[in-house]
Length: 95
Image (cartoon, rainbow, N blue to C red):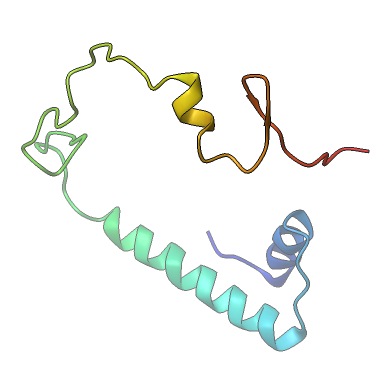
């Protein structure tokens, strides 16, 4: 499957991009090179190869999920530039 200039135009329209003729030519060439490389990878024999989800041997490096006490509302608001009652006060952003 080859990428044509029409394909590049269509992709550019979808991405809301604009290219001049030289850029379209370069993009067409680059996309075709990428597809040729992927096609080359398809030539590899992977019949007896197990699929991998992860290249490393680590299984779970996350911390144990257990509840911990959170900071108090007073501590959370201690460094706030402005607050009202127990809430942060921020500038209005919607008119």
